[in-house]
Length: 180
Length: 180
Image (cartoon, rainbow over all chains, first blue to last red; front, side, top):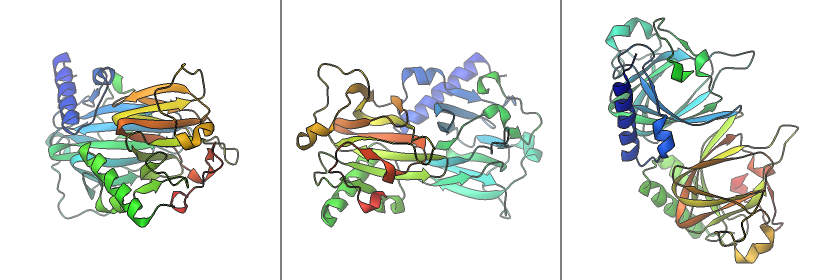
């Protein structure tokens, strides 16, 4: 589990990356930035920082912040109570992100697989998003993503977010309380 | 109707405001920025510039750009075929915006009513949004908004957008084809 110090440092680093990109948060929003290490205890390698602007019964908008080469582990958004899973549009705002979804894979991928968890990355159809580019991921589709060398800021527009139902490929992943 | 020159100039001004705010568009997106004068032929006073990132059957995300003191005229999003009207979250990214919705009004409002259309502004519950602040407008609620002296950039997160069904208070308003 993240120490309070690591958590605070990650929040501060997130604020710095956002400020550099000209993205303005209220003081209140800065205090509640989510820092997700997915219970893997290697935040710089596998982790994600999240600002949720709105999440209502219809739509959700977030800012996702990745540190340099940080990876959000492979997962999918399944149907819940006969309602189809989350559809999400990733719009890269700053930096570069490699997004992997189900489908044809290149011979070698550009991202570096997190060494401790290589077996839990199984989809390799590669989409490179530069700032200003976007991609929409259909429901119930396995996906994972990694930032380039400068980190990345991604605006996520989606249907309602119910993170606690996400299915991760890595069985070691435990959703930390603040993500529920 | 806007001349081709006015249209191009408004697109260029929009790109400049976005670039100053660090918001990156692709070249393709720059070419299709919507410039809406609502058929009133006074764009600098009543008008709106729109970049639509995504508009699918579930959700919509746009960037709205207002020039200094430019006003988006009063309107509402009614139910369509028994589906409730559009819910929209306005997040001010840069500048300042005065948003007016149904409800209790102050003695004097901060925005300046567009002189030629004063009679068509009827709701005055005032919400001032600085950069980083946001407000969610319920369906079927009359609203209008005006930028402060430096203009404004607003991220709009919402349910599906069907602009052609919007109901404007001003009967002179005609939706230009590119808004449909």
